Length: 185
Length: 330
Image (cartoon, rainbow over all chains, first blue to last red; front, side, top):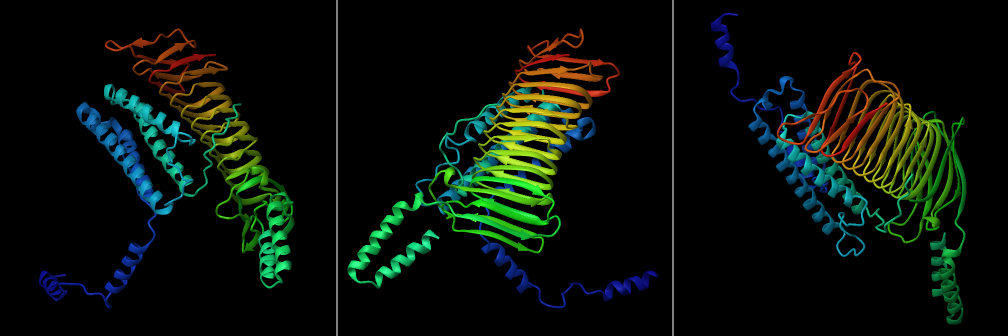
């Protein structure tokens, strides 16, 4: 195709593209549906955020040579960021649950906090947090230890998972808080 | 049934002579007081189903026994929950719903709950849930998922994809095959003779397994772990503070053990053909009784590490602990 012909075609092309019909009312209607949808809570988003963090770090670990981690300082900064992000996620999760609990069960005397010491999850969540602290301290001394890093991230994801599980059971009213004897094998 | 009887009495009392309505009222009070003592409603219902049905089962409390048979039929018999508001056994296409409906809120113990025996086609997709429900299930094949909060799960001879989960109940399983996932928060898991791939997840409960599975993954927080294994391809076990005791006949590919403070005791039936890598963290310790190799101590901290190979170093063994003690022996 000659250059002149190409320039002609370009000159004939409309500067803006207008759809055959006005799509905006449909878009607005769908946005209204999304806005009016019942709040599902931030758990799915938090789980996605946590999974994305985990995947990103695992991807980093599998990156040959761990190029970005050759620099100890940058590794330590990355660890600090992951730690801060995790604490933020926990805070958001607990705030979201507190809000939902008040909204759904106002005046329900039977509902107790999901972090009640009698709940099956309470001790485990505390233990995971303490373990995460120990692992984080160990990682600061040896930030290139892949298995240590994976164990640390596992404590994070397990903590979030258990928190979510405990909140769901409480909000669904399924938990009997009577401490039960544990049958040891 | 109780609700309709009471409402009949009330509506009739309203239209009655005062003395008769007093008698009706007395009868109503008597029935209300005696309500809890009346027998639970019995049922015996069945429907024909197509091959490989998708069954959804919901029984909030009591005991459910699930068995299989060769018929393309589902039968439910037993006693409904004392507070039952109705029993559902409906089919839509390939999907079947079974439910003993309860009020949204109720008081009462598990002993007032349903007591049902359900016969299902052997091959199916089953999703069962309960709250304080004990489930006993055997001889099914397909995708099986059972979820209870405080109930106990007993499973036997299930194959396909099996997922059993409880919060505070125990799980006892025998001869599960395929892709298996057993999960409990504060209850214990006792698994015997499983094969295929097994994933155990616990928090504070103990795990005791004697398994022939090729791939095993175990995650615990504070519970104790005891594994007796045959020929394992991959084993990955993590614990925060729980101790691990593992014995295996043969390792084919990889063994990954991680604890924060739990101790690990690993016994091999024969010397593994493996590359072994131990990292003791700030205060972890290793006692190597497989070879004469001794751990190295860090120059500036008290941490220990040890790397050595046995045979051609075919398999890969990696062990990490922050403060636990690891013992390797045969």
